[in-house]
Length: 113
Image 1 (cartoon, one colour):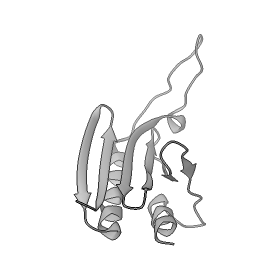
Image 2 (cartoon, helix red, strand yellow):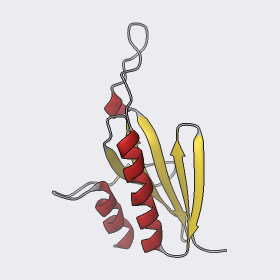
Image 3 (cartoon, one colour):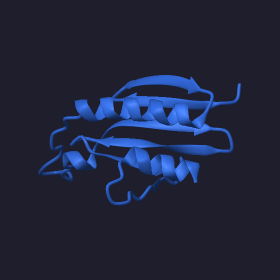
Image 4 (cartoon, one colour):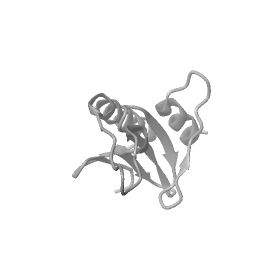
């Protein structure tokens, strides 16, 4: 079945969904991403013997999109509740946000254009 697959990762839990078109897939990504942002609350990790990781450096959730034509993209949710869009799978490339644009809007622009 052709279509778009969405994988939602939050800690050790993974949920999978399918949609038939890109607009529906992007709506699912935003819904899950916003929910993950609301629950993000990581604390600093590490310390004396290992590198210290601030909450903004920790990915606490990820929503990935896979689709026809090798479409690979998604949203990383950080420990401080912020998020950023990316494309690619092995070599991830952060999607630059324009002024006043959310990561979800940036991802929509990148995949639609």
